[in-house]
Length: 439
Image 1 (cartoon, helix red, strand yellow):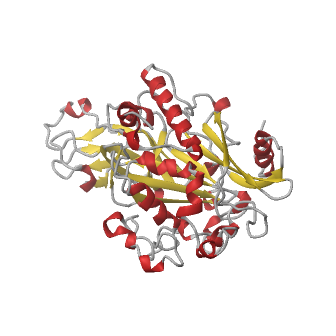
Image 2 (spheres, rainbow, N blue to C red; image 1 turned 180 degrees about the horizontal axis):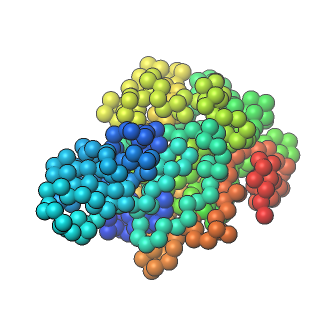
């Protein structure tokens, strides 16, 4: 449970808010690279309650500017990409990717007025099939060397989804281990003891169908701080002399890394980025280390949740067809085969669970249980980080030195280990096995 003041600190992210100041200290994904091709249209973007425009000039350089022209406020996303910049349609003012005003055609010849004008702009980089922006003050930190961005582009699949709620409650679902056994139950689970994970039996490093593991049993949890945020250990009985261990990650301040359908050779990174305090974008990056993911994602090994352009599930604007406004098309007559009555799509289940709380969950009314250990720990870490920013310190996960830009152990996976194993050593061993040997 949080106080109203603490809840406001974490959920309010607009300009001038403490929570917004925290999120602005990190590189945030703001668009998919596919949305802004060379020769493409300027893209209006709302991020952290700011109205922006993203464009790519004729040389392929990206610019992220304030959307409204500093002359008379016209919307620059309607503008023309030409002559090395973005030109406002109203009076022809031209801005380069850094916000510098290059031309003011209606001003007298020889005027230097344009030299006094600079449109708000933010640094941007293109990584892993997405465009990231730094919207904070001062020199940007180093872009974090997460493994999603260390592999060739064909090994990473980027996507985004619109979420009709505050970013925090959606991200908290990523490190809530208990909900999986209920919200995502398959028809096999409804009809049997729960030992079959249905379509999820191929997820992770353990073949659940052959292991004496009930992935839906209540796990024992342990959390530990890490340079990127927090590592979460979920432990279940794995059969005689075995422990089933699942490792997930909370990354400061608004992303998670979870084990995914690509097995032990990859995982899924998820950012929840506020559009404003009531809706947000969910950016996902699925990594497959041993093969190009563009081929693998079309096979049965991959769940529909990583095919966001599938018209069965999504419209053309990154929205679920099953939404809060149509009650997720719940069909209660299917309860015999579907726990939720909302079909088999995990992302729809998660949307229901987080969006139906209201656009901003009232955490003064909640009652956290033992399986919410990671949620409470992550909130405390974020509140400490807000205090760090207010006192002039970099928060956890912000990297300034190349020597510190090492996140090779920021991995998520599941595995059967011997009872009594040292979980930190298991992480190190898995990182070594995947070819990212730790120093």
